[in-house]
Image 1: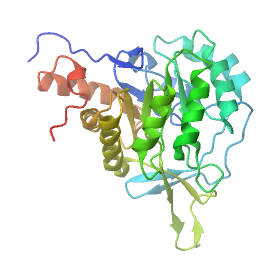
Image 2: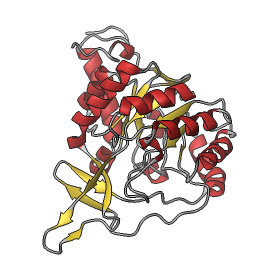
Image 3: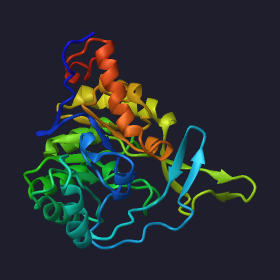
Image 4: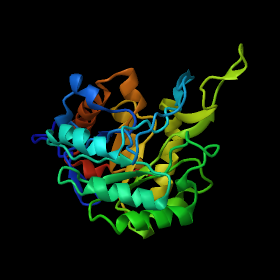
Length: 305
């Protein structure tokens, strides 16, 4: 057994986290305060914010599938003014970095909202949601195009000196191409990845199970796809990767880190078990102790191939 406490600190593009576990945007909000201690997390990533208030997509918005779920919530948002007035002060009372997720309809609007939100001393970075698959355009997203990804990240990079995390979409031919575009434009970190575009049909009504027809597929059955993408991106880029997709327990998170992720986001697991993120942190600690690993950085990218 180890004689000293394990070191779980990781660095995401200049931002130091006490441990690698954080919520995936869209699965976390102030109401979670009643369930878990936010101060135990590595970072706080609330639901994506938009410039103006938005109602989100029509209902039904969620359906279960074998090994996961499909959601089409849309970017339901109170708007940036409400966010800065209410949400930022709420999260600022915790000793954990706040990384807002932002969404917009244009490159210029991404830059504008990023500049506003990172102007607060209580905001420590920004995650660019360029990859949401359940909006307009038959599942199209900014992050499906390398040139558009480059222009968007470059524009945001010019308006803030705080860490920029680009959330990639798995719904592309080559995620490495998009990752390289984001890195070359100045992204400090990459989130690999958002949900998979999917569809489910009720065979009795013959109608799609969600009103938006298609939505984002998440849950444990997506993990092998995301592991593959994390590994591929880690072989091509030099900036830190945040793994996201299908993490249900500590071993899942460790698997992502072995593939090349520096940190890990947890989403669907929190719907199944609201205490999931805390348990995952504890399970990583237990794994490190069991394997005599003093520093979590000794896990990152250490898959033996």
